[in-house]
Length: 85
Image 1 (tube, rainbow, N blue to C red):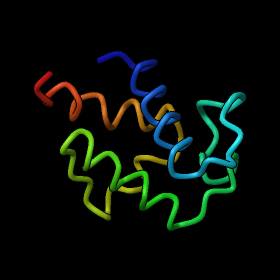
Image 2: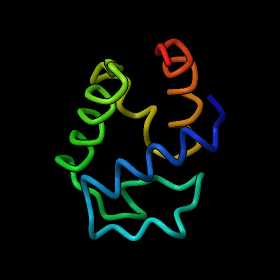
Image 3: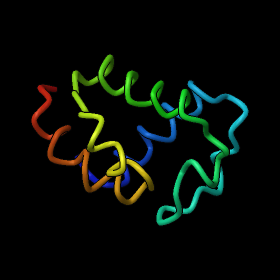
Image 4: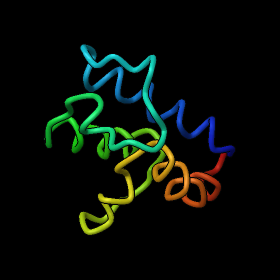
């Protein structure tokens, strides 16, 4: 799965868990929490949605890997590649 597809997945999940977030101009290299004013519960909801949709387990100590869209794509790429289609 390509980086842009992963970024789109993350943005779609954000639009579900934080419907007021303005996701049209998100910068790929800036922390999502800072750009979109996400709180810790929003972030946990994103992690839970990834688990629900794609059966991806993300350990708490690896949460910083999901800070930006670029880091999400780098971290989730191998995990999503292992998910059966």
